[in-house]
Length: 322
Image (cartoon, rainbow, N blue to C red; front, side, top):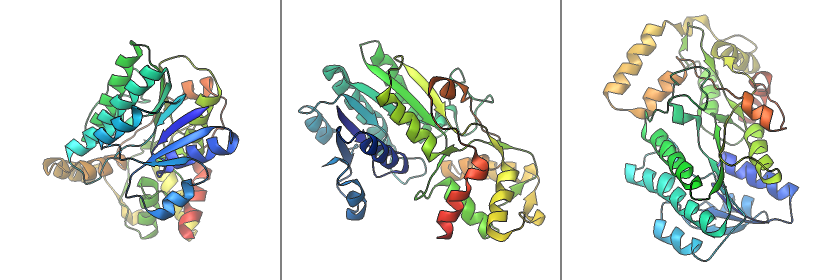
């Protein structure tokens, strides 16, 4: 079995590479990484996969490589994430055009494409809860737009014979990542998180959940066109999670003096929207509005471990303490 994996220096891609290489040492795995990747991160991949230094945004180089290589499975996990300071052209080339090139390679060689999308295709805040496969797609920022466009191309290619599956992980928590979960803990620790008084629900994804889902796809047959939202078994009340984190850090609930009415958050959201600051607009939304997803099809389709954000978020807190 020959497998190509992109995004192996990221949280999800690195975890998937480790899991598959451990469970199937007989597989020939190739990892595409950026040429400027830090040597220490390359050392983590070495021994698990053959390393090819190709930037997904370098379309001509990617085409040159794919013209002479074929695989049984292509795991397309790499992408430029939202909030990064890249141009729209760089986002488009890395997240959309690279997907097109990998699709063409899969059709040509009758390979299976496993694509890592995002629940962000529903927008930072979905129009219905829980968001499901019929929920309206909203490109409310450019990162979300590129994921929607990539999914469109995969769906169109399946009419031409492509076999593919799409997994949409929610915001994922795992050791070594410095995104939303990490920043949340840091803000709670420093008493810098404004906590909304309204009851809101959020839906995170344990790294083992998405890793197990990706691994399941290479070990089991699945219906072509499978699309699954991936997150923990249940959403959690944001206030409950904040208090849980605070108790782990200080043995006390989060200070009530730092709780504010929803009107303050709406004012902040409007200001950042007016300033066309996509990153801060979504940050305010994520801590002041509910977002959760229908994951019942995931656990009905796959026999994978079930995780609950509370108390399992504790391992993130412990890793930050270290």
